[in-house]
Image (cartoon, rainbow, N blue to C red):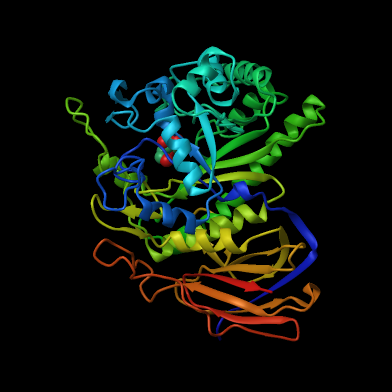
Length: 504
Ligand code: AHR
C-alpha cells in the first residue's frame, strides 16, 4: 500500500514569530556573484549604476530580506577603504581567498545602492582576519554616524549623505577554519571578538552583533568552539553563527534528502551550548542563532574542478562554485527552510549562500539571460507564504534508514499562521525516492480556511535541472490532488518532492 503520513496543525502551539531576516541571502566578492552577476554595466538591462535589472527583478521575486556582504572568506583579507571614493583611483587587489583579481568597482556605496533597489537590508561583516578592532570601528563610523566626524564626513563626500544605518554585523567569518586568513584558536578569537564587540557598541549601541560559530558541524572543535567563544563574548554579542552545506555523496540520494534532520540537530546542539553557557554565567540574556550560510554545495567538485591553482594569473570574475541544481537539491533546500522555520524561536536570521552565480538560486550569462535555478522556487514560495508564527506540528510518518543519520521520517512538515491576516501555510517534503505519500493534515483547530494556492516541485527525473539551454525545464506545478474538507487537508506528495499549500 502507498505510504501515508498524518500531520496535526494547531495555532495554539506556536514555535515562535518568524523573523523576516530568516529569508536573508549572501553576496560575496567571489567568482561571478558581484561582477558579471549583479553588476554588468555593458549588459542590455544594466541601469545607470551598472546593475542588471533582469537580476534585480529575480532577486525581488525571490523575496530576500537581508544580504550579508562582502564575504565569506573574502572578508578576511578585505580593506573596506579600497571600495570607497572615486572609482578610477580604487586599487586592484589580489584576493587570497579565491585567487582572483578584485577591481573594487563595487564597494560599500554601490552595494548599499543595489540593496535599496533590491528592497533588502544590508548586513555587513568586518575583517577580523588581517585586521582588528580599529578597522572595524572605522567602518562602523563611516557607515552609521550621520556627520561631524572625519569618517562620517568622508562618506558624505564620497556620495552618500544619509548613514547606511547598518544594524547587523558579523564579527569576522569562519574564524575556526584553517583555510581562513588569520584564523585563530577559540580562546584568541573569543577575546578579539569581545573587544571588537564592546568597542563597536560604544560607538553605536544599536548594532546587533553576530559572533562566529563553527564553520560546520563536522569541524573537530564543533561544540567546544561555541562554548569557549561564548564564554568570552556572551554579554557582548546577540547572535552566534552557524554554517552548513550539504550535497548528494556517492549517489546516496535517500541520505541526502534527509539533510534537514542534520540541520535540526545542528541547531539544537548550538542552542543547547548557548543555553548552558548562559546558565554557567548566570546571564539573563538569550543568544539566538544566525544561520548565515546554508545551502547545497558540492565542495568535492570545487576541490577537483573549480579551484584556481595558477598563482601567476589572478582572474577577474572567474566561473567559480557555479553549481547547477537538481530537483533533489531544491527539495533539500525546501526542507532546510522547513528546519529553519521549525526553530523560529531561536533562529533569528539566516542567509542562503549565495545569491547570484555562486552556489546560487539565480544564474546569469554575460550579455545574456538570467534564470531561476531549481532551488529558487522553494525559497521564493516559503518567503512569500511563510508569514507570522511558525507552528509546532505533530507528525506521524513511516521512517527509513540512512547511513549517517539513523532512521529518519519519510515526510517532514511545518506550518505557519499569521494571526493578523488569518492566512496560513503548510510546507511539506516527501523524501522517498520511490513512493508517493498520501498526507492528511488536521486543520480543525485553525478555523474556517480554504485552499488558496498549491505548489509542488518534483520531476520524473530527480536530477533534472534548469540550464542556459533549458532555463525552464523545472518549475513547481499546482498540486491537483489537494482537497480540504471537514477541517482535513488531504493531498498526495510525489516521490522526491517539496510542496507548499497556502490557506486563507
Ligand atoms: O559560500 C562560500 C564560502 O563558504 C564562504 O566564503 C565561506 O564562508 C564558506 O566556507
